Length: 95
Image 1 (cartoon, rainbow, N blue to C red):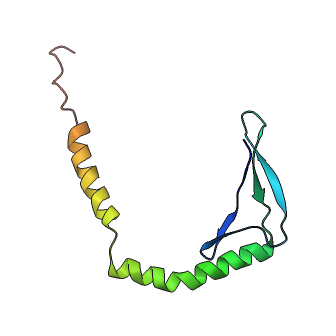
Image 2 (cartoon, rainbow, N blue to C red):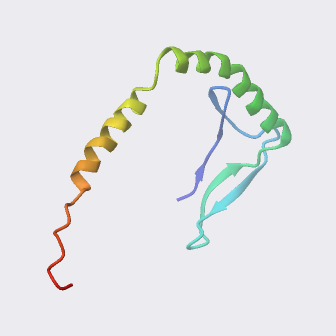
Protein backbone atom coordinates (compact mmCIF):
# COMPACT_ATOMS: atom_id res chain seq x y z
CA UNK A 1 0.00 0.00 0.00
CA UNK A 2 1.54 3.28 -1.09
CA UNK A 3 0.66 6.52 0.66
CA UNK A 4 1.29 10.16 -0.29
CA UNK A 5 2.82 12.01 2.66
CA UNK A 6 3.07 15.78 3.05
CA UNK A 7 5.28 18.09 5.13
CA UNK A 8 4.02 19.94 8.24
CA UNK A 9 5.06 23.59 7.83
CA UNK A 10 3.51 26.61 9.51
CA UNK A 11 0.61 24.68 11.00
CA UNK A 12 -0.53 22.99 7.81
CA UNK A 13 0.22 19.98 5.62
CA UNK A 14 1.94 21.07 2.41
CA UNK A 15 3.67 19.58 -0.62
CA UNK A 16 7.13 20.65 -1.73
CA UNK A 17 7.07 24.13 -3.22
CA UNK A 18 7.96 22.79 -6.67
CA UNK A 19 5.74 19.70 -6.32
CA UNK A 20 8.68 17.27 -6.56
CA UNK A 21 8.34 13.90 -4.80
CA UNK A 22 10.25 10.67 -4.45
CA UNK A 23 9.32 7.11 -3.52
CA UNK A 24 10.10 5.92 0.00
CA UNK A 25 10.94 2.22 0.12
CA UNK A 26 10.90 -0.36 2.86
CA UNK A 27 14.49 -1.18 3.86
CA UNK A 28 13.55 -4.81 4.45
CA UNK A 29 11.60 -5.53 1.23
CA UNK A 30 12.49 -2.73 -1.17
CA UNK A 31 8.75 -2.22 -1.73
CA UNK A 32 7.53 1.35 -2.29
CA UNK A 33 5.63 2.29 0.86
CA UNK A 34 4.89 5.91 0.12
CA UNK A 35 5.51 9.02 -1.89
CA UNK A 36 7.06 11.91 0.01
CA UNK A 37 7.81 15.52 -0.87
CA UNK A 38 11.34 16.24 -2.03
CA UNK A 39 11.83 19.39 0.00
CA UNK A 40 14.02 22.16 -1.36
CA UNK A 41 15.99 24.95 0.29
CA UNK A 42 12.90 27.13 -0.13
CA UNK A 43 10.82 24.55 1.80
CA UNK A 44 13.46 24.45 4.54
CA UNK A 45 13.45 28.25 4.73
CA UNK A 46 9.64 28.25 5.06
CA UNK A 47 9.86 25.68 7.87
CA UNK A 48 12.59 27.62 9.69
CA UNK A 49 10.66 30.88 9.39
CA UNK A 50 7.49 29.24 10.70
CA UNK A 51 9.39 27.72 13.64
CA UNK A 52 11.01 31.04 14.50
CA UNK A 53 7.64 32.80 14.37
CA UNK A 54 6.09 30.18 16.67
CA UNK A 55 8.99 30.15 19.15
CA UNK A 56 8.20 33.27 21.25
CA UNK A 57 4.67 32.08 22.12
CA UNK A 58 5.83 28.50 22.72
CA UNK A 59 8.74 29.64 24.91
CA UNK A 60 6.46 31.75 27.12
CA UNK A 61 4.02 28.88 27.54
CA UNK A 62 6.81 26.63 28.79
CA UNK A 63 8.01 29.21 31.32
CA UNK A 64 4.51 30.04 32.55
CA UNK A 65 3.26 26.44 32.69
CA UNK A 66 5.94 23.93 33.69
CA UNK A 67 5.54 20.61 32.00
CA UNK A 68 3.26 18.23 33.88
CA UNK A 69 4.97 15.37 32.08
CA UNK A 70 8.30 16.33 33.67
CA UNK A 71 6.79 16.00 37.16
CA UNK A 72 4.99 12.79 36.20
CA UNK A 73 8.22 11.37 34.82
CA UNK A 74 10.08 12.11 38.04
CA UNK A 75 7.37 10.41 40.12
CA UNK A 76 7.34 7.41 37.78
CA UNK A 77 11.11 6.98 38.00
CA UNK A 78 10.99 7.19 41.80
CA UNK A 79 8.25 4.56 42.08
CA UNK A 80 9.84 2.33 39.44
CA UNK A 81 13.15 2.29 41.28
CA UNK A 82 11.54 0.70 44.32
CA UNK A 83 9.73 -1.84 42.13
CA UNK A 84 12.81 -3.00 40.23
CA UNK A 85 15.25 -2.98 43.13
CA UNK A 86 15.69 -6.49 44.44
CA UNK A 87 17.58 -7.00 47.69
CA UNK A 88 20.48 -9.39 47.29
CA UNK A 89 20.79 -12.31 49.66
CA UNK A 90 24.06 -12.48 51.57
CA UNK A 91 26.59 -14.84 50.06
CA UNK A 92 26.68 -18.28 51.55
CA UNK A 93 29.63 -18.88 53.87
CA UNK A 94 32.70 -20.14 52.07
CA UNK A 95 31.80 -18.66 48.69
